[in-house]
Image (cartoon, rainbow, N blue to C red):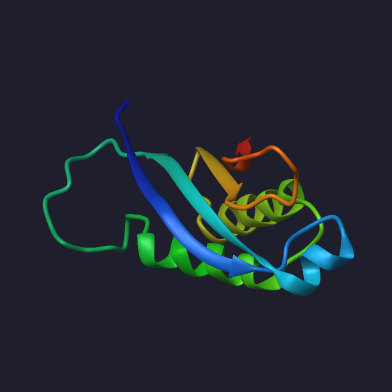
Length: 118
């Protein structure tokens, strides 16, 4: 059985996600990577999206959930995965990584990430 994978990498958002109230007031920069897979038993011979997954639809789901904010990256990743699975039942697996680009911690010169496999 063949499968197709669609990836969205380096999506950038300014959002209000953080455990501490100050993080939810000030906001932060985030990067999101998403990869989803679905079976494809027949060749793709036309340009129809009817039996495919639109990356524009995936982006809209990610954008909506990132704009909602929340306390934990884990919760936001879970909401995104659940909404994708509900809307696009053909998807059999995926991984989403949400990175907080400027975590409010002394000594971190990088970023903090959460990855959810679904």
